[in-house]
Length: 495
Ligand code: AMP
Ligand code: ZN
Image (tube, rainbow, N blue to C red; front, top):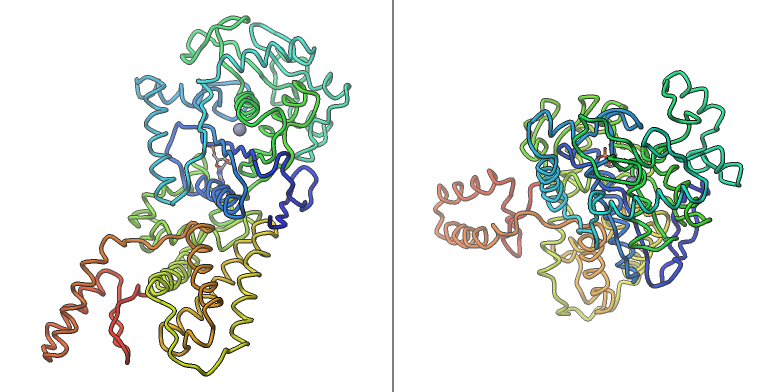
């Protein structure tokens, strides 16, 4: 197995990844709250963990990947008071909450497949795990780590910490600071301490999403679902838990307290957080009004966009930065990404045409052989170094250089030898498609293009230059270029 190192938010350092029960890996990622269209910021986080899932699988792990859908309990403002995000939308639109959930779940799935992410092994919902959540609240009450107040149940941070818990250890928050920050904001008297968080909330009469419980009609606190669903499917302690950086506190901090409170140990071995997609340095978020929907990118209809960008261009754009760095949206960066992605897509197309048919017996070019072997090795090293896709992509371009040389007849396959030739061709295609999830787009059009190209060759031979120009401009309108080379005529994606 590859020596994969992952940055653990909890220990604040890169650690060698050693799953509890190899080759099995349990991985949980907080999914979306399905009450509005996913924006490009959300996409970044899910792409990060899709890439991790792909790489773990690629290097031989058997991953159970659980990504939930939050369909109840996430309140407007992310705190313990106020309306449910989904319930609020349902009221505004005068529809059933589950209609809201279904609509945005469908959208989420569509977007995830547009970006070629692999569906998780299990996609559980909070409403589907009400029994587990009620049982967890009962267990925490029985442990003395929770208390009931007016039909709501809160986690008792002070008692937890007195018993050795370290609330704040994931996010590095200091309890006294937190107390100072929250005291003024939080005027409610139901809680013993403003730091305590809701495990179960009593539903006011106008709250439409409600379930019966030993404490009356109510609904679960937002953090509880992830504790219940992750441990139900992955065990009381599991390998990887991921999400966006903004979930570190309070969401994941609360998950640690809940899990620890229920079992007496940390629920998660490796906590991973993907950094934010920003616009002019500010987090992309629907509430800030700076978010883009994927559909707006694909059509180019958003006022901040200079043109349309395809899903794979956007995927490439995101993979070009390391997941722990912020990534700022910009037209220039996307244009550069389009160029880069198209170069790779051209490489993928021509690599499929290459075969090992040695013609030249001049011996091996050892420098090139070494360079190719090294690029392959360095791709693994980059991915093993906390999933450094940025460096990995640079290695892919090294491999691309040799693929293009073979295609252009500047290099003969015999100079590489069969083993290195296969290594080059297979590594390029699998790194690009299987690990980075970058596919060639629009392949369904290719049979028509090949037919047109046959006509083009004929028109050229017959010197029918008006028709030659017509075909050429048809390709151009599709973002493609006809390449008249010495040894052949072919088409390519315009870079
Ligand atoms: P939400 O539906 O708001 O809970 O978000 C779903 C996921 O997207 C969470 O993991 C968030 O951390 C993540 N997320 C939200 N905004 C951004 C952003 N601007 N950049 C990256 N990830 C984000
Ligand atoms: Zn969660």
